[in-house]
Image (cartoon, rainbow, N blue to C red; front, side):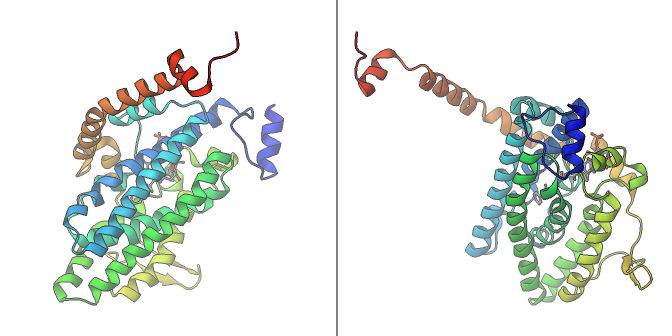
Length: 318
Ligand code: FAQ
């Protein structure tokens, strides 16, 4: 069975839920998918606070659609985790108890409407660079979920960039807001790709299993190369004095993110960790009656009283 699993991966074919897989593969997939699902759900919070304060009906409709998409992504991803035997309620409990991670980026505040644009441009931009290769990930349900998610992330990235273009063509105060948001989000966006390869405990095995197709540093470089010309077109300066084109490498050189800050955010000491977790916990508690009602309804439809069945289908022959 192990040979069949290895051959399937080596041939670039997919592992499906009923296939045999090593425990470590199942565990790693559940960890990554759960972290990804939690990120989508917690990721609704920073932008969500701006829905009621959007500057126009058009901006509000766009933002509502984006935040709803993020909820949808969380739901597909929890479903993908369920195909591996994970229990959605258990994953939610692990998130709200702080036993499972979500992306570091969502522990930073969204301070102005320019942040909505910068989150779309940089955060969704980084998510796309990370997730497009995951459409070829070895676990079938995850890879297929990722195709639709990436299509929606492209809309998210473009709406952010378009908002920023409008603001950069506006007043000097609006341009300053965009620059300030880019200054705050640039380094945390680079951290989304995870620790440097030398400090990434999971990359080597995940690459062998075809879960990850590129290392954290390769994707970070790809993101920088893609984003620098976009910043120039916008007229935004990226806050890195070491950022410059390297002709020999054919890539941009860039400075080192503050990995101590990254570790602090992962350990719960980021600017918004406590607030994000408290909000998610409160939403879960407030939703208890909905879960109870849904379970009661499901039990009734599964075991309807006999008279209701016969009313719908006619009494069975004696
Ligand atoms: N934040 O060995 P590695 C979005 C953890 S996009 C927090 O390198 P791995 C869309 C890692 O889990 C954001 N934790 O780990 C959106 C591991 O934990 P362990 C979500 C991080 O898994 C946009 C430990 O550090 N995207 O939500 C981070 O091989 C806008 C060691 O790291 C995904 O999750 C981090 N940044 O590589 C929504 C994509 N980085 O072992 C709303 C799928 C690392 O202690 C608005 N995930 N860790 O449990 C992946 O591609 C990978 O899991 C990586 C990390 C690349 C994130």
